[in-house]
Length: 68
Image (tube, rainbow, N blue to C red; front, side, top):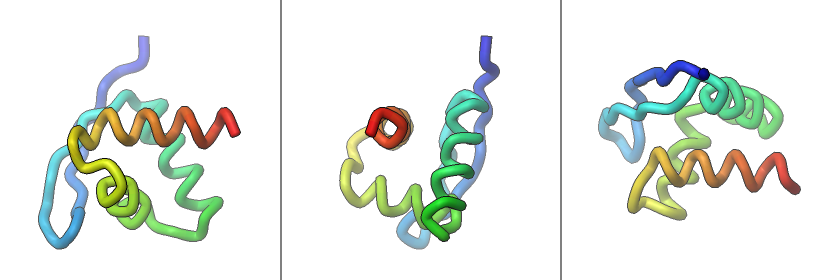
């Protein structure tokens, strides 16, 4: 089973903690690199589009990215 990892990131000028499985963190790094962005910048964009539950929004974004 994939281990959950908690990381602190800066979103909209404030620090927040996000817990995701390590595979999702790896995917975020890969997507951010492919788009020429930092992971924090990518997370901030996703947060701006779906701010309700950031961890869930990140997982859905990654799923949609790889399905397309």
